[in-house]
Length: 395
Image 1 (cartoon, rainbow, N blue to C red):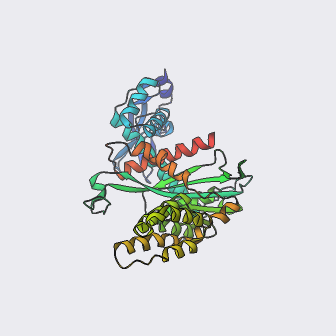
Image 2: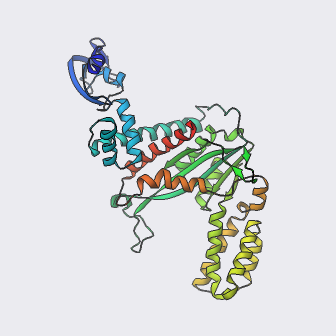
Image 3: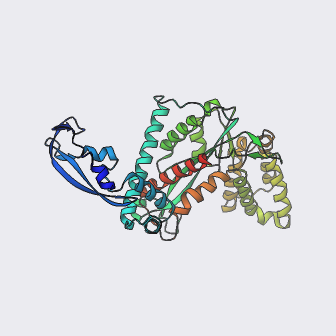
């Protein structure tokens, strides 16, 4: 019945139609096409046109039904996207068969999901280019939120050896085995909780990610910030782990934003600094660390430096360790004014993006034995970011 209904209009649009490349394609007859739908396979009989100049054919009815170049109906493709973004492709195909009675092999599920993910990523990048080029002006949020946060981080995704050729890594052999996916989470905040700590606005998170270089990622971040109302909020804040590329990106996109180093990363570096000084601190190590953690909570980076300089270390590996860890604090001192940030009701932690790295990227792409192509991983990440953003906004 569905096949007869869809074939009631066979798509004949006259003896000639545009081929889409500036030529005319001529009608040659009718051809059948089998597409899989949520109700099972359906055979379409539709008009076929051939372009002599381009050497290819087309069926206008395919485009009208959303199946041009595809063998899955839009509804079934959407179901496959949800399943394939959630679990490995073989399991996704199994879910479709068990829940909907539709049989797809794992390879076909993968091709369809990756094609749709690539389309989502391409559309996102095109929209970002239009927004940053001021050819598309998003409407400001109504009402505008009080605070908007951009929390940025990166996480490694296991890829094939071809994708890491000639790339340096952290392994013992110096070879890379992952490629970094950069992730940004945007959310708003209007209120504080009963304990006085800031509370993220419900259903306010949106996610963007890419394997592209930081300069390209910056364009996506800027466009999403504009879309989320960066120019209309009272307080704009960027939170990161202290990596230089994050602050360079923030300066290039929203120079007016407040920068905050994630407090928990800062505490980890303070623990590392203490371990580097342990051979001099001896049994005073715990007392010294507690005092420095208090300095950090107050944003007293000068106090931390003064306490370190009391223990002069001669040249060598230990001195290099200490200087490297201390440099982390000195380079980020303006971003570590935690007492002042908290007095203004601001978040000082990047937990939301670390959770995003695990839930949006890690849970699907970093399972045991997985090795992705960058193109394939990027497409699935695009689907997961889109689904995570949509689910948040639909709560």
